[in-house]
Length: 273
Image (cartoon, rainbow, N blue to C red; front, side):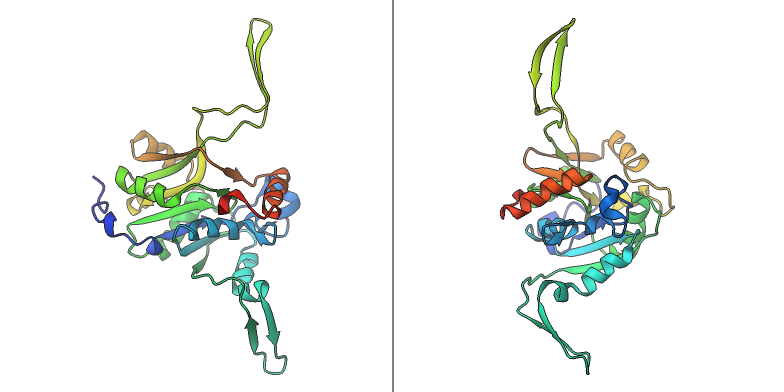
């Protein structure tokens, strides 16, 4: 048994910190990320990062640690002026007093803006931020700033605690973007336009970890979370999976952004159901 799992029945979700990776360059969507980090690319009225945080918030999470790097000032400016950006306001230019009117978003969030280096890899960013801001929490959540889902994160946390492993990953089962052709000899025997691959699971990016996992990370710039730390965690039998068959999408390309924007503009994006 991993230390710290015995008290999970009294765990308060609001006290579990959520570390969100926001420092990458977003090179596959360069037309949007030349002047801002990818998590700040808007889908609808708000950046995709806001949507990710709302997903956690609807399940009761309220402590966020944003691991910043590339264009960190853009994220800092957004949250420093959050209510000015999202509500009407009056500014007295003589006294510099600011009055915010009718706040449209009453959010009980605590947001820590943690600079973790311009070029640091994912594992390094988590290690740095956790050393300073994990506090006494036995468990923490971690995700990327560009993926949205309707997964039940409270249920994933419960599965993580019940499984008593160092880590749990959200496994998602998205349909293929490309048609599948099954061939026998030189003859096509089945054609599927966009098949569901029922037994194929990929990393959905929503993790829960016990704090002991941090011993496997390094603050060195080249520490990549998805390489040795997670590969070895799986080989050691310490990485559980929470399988999710519902909605999941990652904003990797302009095509992805356009699709997510259409869902937001429909007024009923699936990750808010």
